[in-house]
Length: 360
Ligand code: CP
Image (tube, rainbow, N blue to C red; front, side, top):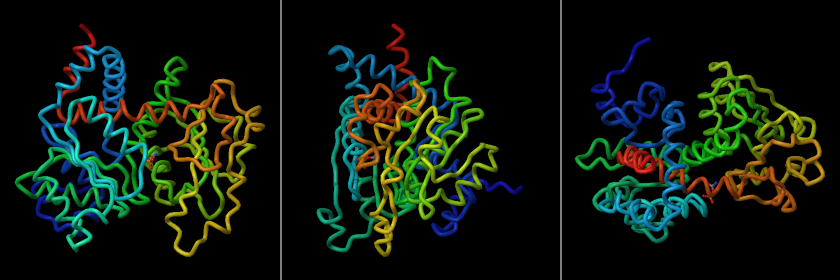
């Protein structure tokens, strides 16, 4: 196998770089042996994941006291973050904003191309470059697949290569959602042997849901995790994900029967239909009600299983389930703030201080 050297990667045009296999270009997004840009789930090893989870738990614990919170806010008070979210978001945006406040980062934001100079014809590339004049970190959500990677490629070729975090890129990836999903699994199974050997069932629009893609990539870091993908025919998980599972010897099955599979799951990961990606209104012909979790179905679910959802939800989970002890989705979204703070602390080299502080 021919390995591409860093100097050669640096010389590639964007088109050639984009088509380079991911494993050959991951180094391009690292500096001094750690992540500089966070763009893909495939960038996380098990030791790195667990370092971020430990940091997240320590931040949560330190932030409980005023003295602890005051100290956390000194860590990155000399840094500025740009939140560039031009695709709708509630929790990713607010949890990143809150995580910035926890670490003392100063925050600016743009939430629509209709309020930026893109409305006047400025390209997304020039927009990103402009942010790098003012910020030390860009967290971005974009409707276009590959835009976060392109932004990192572009800035890493300039004299002001500021860090990029992908907060969701089209149908492609949502790596920080996967981080918080994994953190939720990690905490939930901490006294049950961890994530190894668990069965995770993902339900719904698996074709266009970027969270299920990114979560599948991260689950590779654990042993003998079994996956059950439950989806309508048209919304089945993509062939690229199936190829990834086979390559990594991760056992999986596909089904369209939610009830039949429920009893097997240690975690049920529900998702909404992603009809914003419809081309010809095709979602209206899909009976998605068969992929809704209803209260009466819970008799089939293990007593210690957990129910997850990246949110927002429509009708995929009955609201009567919200008070079931297995419902984990509200805690899951709160976990997002702590894990995103931990990720930023790691990327700015502050996680060791946090871990030491908690040990005092
Ligand atoms: N899970 C998630 O990405 O939620 P938002 O779209 O509200 O950010």
